[in-house]
Structure formats: structure tokens, C-alpha cells
Length: 154
Image 1 (tube, helix red, strand yellow):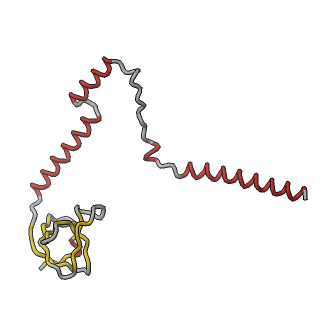
Image 2 (cartoon, one colour):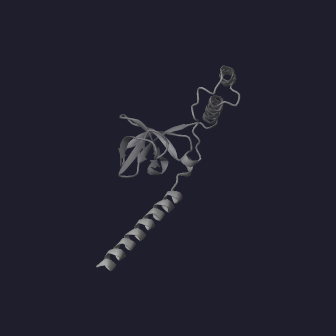
Image 3 (cartoon, one colour):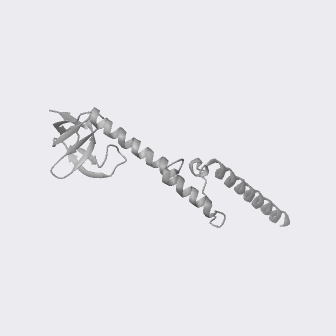
């Protein structure tokens, strides 16, 4: 009887140690690298002097090496690129027919966008085509984007 109790205690100890090792290995393997690389600034309001705060405010106002300035410039660059692309590629409008039984129309050009409506086979839609994979379609009920490969040209 004493041997059985000792044997069970040893087995339980080994299982507990194996579980701890397993959890440690899984934690190491499945650490999200995107979150691990992020550094969160600590708000230490007492250590910032008034002069440092004023200098920081002046830099942000000038847009020099500040996060807000960098983000603003990226947005402005993208807006400029969109304007250039719109001028370069002229949209053609035509009427096309849906070739599949049901076709999801989305709020933007891609499957990551929300659904705005569903088109059915042989339904005719007005299409604004810029030569890309996704085209803008207009019906009486909604306006959305679909993949051009599911539409036939008339």
C-alpha cells in the first residue's frame, strides 16, 4: 500500500512538472511578435519639465520628427497618389450581366469590406470599370463593389 501511494505521488509530480514545462514552451512559441515588439510609453508626468513640454509642443507644431507630423504626411502623400491615379485612369461605364447564381456586393474593393447587397444571376447592373479586379456596380437598391470575373460584358 505504501508503495502504491509513493508511486502515485511520483507520477503526479512528474505530470505536474511536464505540464509546467509544456505551458512554458507554448508561451514561448506562440508569443505574438507584433505585440512583443511594441513599446508602451510610461506616463511619468512629474519627470517632464515645463521647458521640455514647451519644446515638445513646438516640435509638434512645426511637424518635425513628431508622430503626428509623420502620420499627417503619409496621409497627404496617399491622398496625392489617389488624385494622380484618378486622373491617369479613366473609368468606363457599361451595363453588364451577373454570371453566377448569387454575387455579394461589398462596400469597398475587396473581400474584407462589409456586404451592402446581393446580386442574382442574369441581373443587369451599371458598372464603373477602371481596369482593376474589382469594379463599382450600381443598382436601384445599392452601390457596391464586385469582382469583375463574375460579370459578363454585353
